[in-house]
Length: 149
Ligand code: DQA
Image (cartoon, rainbow, N blue to C red):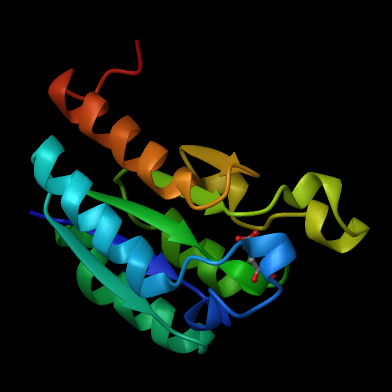
């Protein structure tokens, strides 16, 4: 079983997109770091990035039920997508919502997340390290047999 790592719209442009907000690390570099750390923690990862809401919903329906956990940065869909929320709420596995920037300290419209209500937890504002922290959480959770203690 693997962990789905899903990145939403415009995150394929990490590295050059608003580096003062999102840093200089590319998505490929983040995925490489996650793969390396996943190996250390004994986790198998499967990566997906899309700029299309329906493609993410399709992926969640197809692969969500047979996955171990989900790490998702829904990007702009965070603030708009009931469809993504509904897709996630049908899957009975841990879901970690990650945002590189602190969405609560930015524009008003970014403070609303349609996803957080169906996520296990949310990591915001810790830069690209947030993805690795999400991996750590899931690895610890599975080692403890699924309890949150
Ligand atoms: C983001 C925050 C969102 O508001 C924004 O639309 C993104 C990236 C983040 O990682 O900080 O695309 O999810």
